[in-house]
Length: 288
Length: 328
Image 1 (cartoon, rainbow over the protein chains, first blue to last red):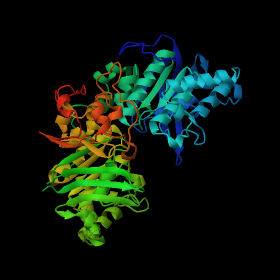
Image 2 (image 1 turned 60 degrees about the horizontal axis):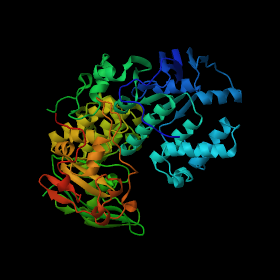
Image 3 (image 1 turned 60 degrees about the vertical axis):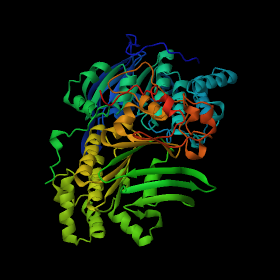
Image 4 (image 1 turned 120 degrees about the horizontal axis):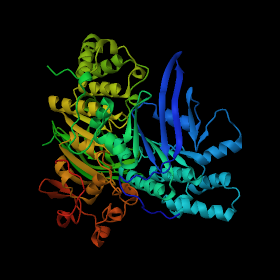
């Protein structure tokens, strides 16, 4: 797999067709006999080749949205279609599950707990290839695994090491290679760069941009970090307490936020010249 | 003489694997020093060394001096007094740093009784004042609550209240806002900043986030592979970095107000002191490295406004840019 830079900043990469369409999603959980609304009336679409950012704080419902898209949770109301096919629930046939895995993949936040500790990067990728591309010869799959691991920058020595001997950034690259191996239409990245060192975070963000430019995949990039959303996402959805409070082109939403919550998030993000400000509602009494 | 002084502090573990190498730092009363670095840089180890907490079987050399007293030479009772009444540590995850089975009131009162010798009644009154001063309303009711009834941001305020109550003159804050939401982060760093100024406290603020450090620190020491590589006034360090690592660290962070075509990135992975190459620890990842950098470890050299550990800092002074400026 060769990796080329084919797009430029702020130039829309997406084409017009929607890969994912979510309409009127609602999800409630029961907690101590009380009903808790995690996601309420959430609708959005993801265009082919686009990166859609999902930003919000803890409890905003962004991870629940990811689980609904993957089918880990079942919505109480609303519908999800991927490639125009509705994602009905209760389907357990292996063939259907495999087909869905070819459509959506996920990369988790914590590369320490999302990998099998007994499996090297090479084995993890080969397992996915065997599952989805069983018709290819062993040699072809080996070649494809090498290409994928090359693309995410894992050298020969590291691709045969167990996760325990790898750094957080290297493990996250395995997670990305494993997701890519299924050649999905959409990859959901749930806080996928949040636990990484700053210098490694930049490498992984560049890698994600390169891979998207080359393959035309879509991303749903979930993060609490406005800066990484700004760098990667074409459009952004701002969530709070389970609902969407603002949406639009990332540049427009961040440069000219309309909703008070988005304005607050934007003001709270450290940046050059930043001074932390007190929010009026929770002021601290002055020392007497 | 500054309140806290580290002089040539070196720590190595089993078979002399180096962890920290010749750390020399000072923090004075009323001053905030940011300690910034990536994994393995030794920033948390440095904070623990200030409390005379070291990994098992480690060899330690150099000095740690607090208000003129040598911390490494303290006997058990002096060390206990020092840890209870002079220095307080605030950790990344407040839920892991507090006993979940005891109420907030018990937590604060115990600290006040051992550090200030207050009786139960006086300790409770003081605990109410402390919660008030960190912006927790209905303080008297809150004393009866347990940690799980608090949010992360509120519990971190409780930890700060505990630090204040002990009468500590030095606060060691180790990534105190990393586990918090951004809006809460702003409030907690503001609180630390205000309390530091009001009470003339020394603050050692450990973080991986340079933007955050510059916002509340007077000075910043950047660490790499167990060594300090640059120690200068915060805004000057940000606007005109003198070490290539500092410049790269500022430049590779995405900005909230701008999307760039491609992020500047530092090749390779962060290394620890034990795995650092010969010569300058950063030479394998540095775009300015020359032969000398691979052969000889540069000294931490005094400059006009601080210290820099780079062979080429003088000749690079004009060319080193991070692409960002703190001051417009």
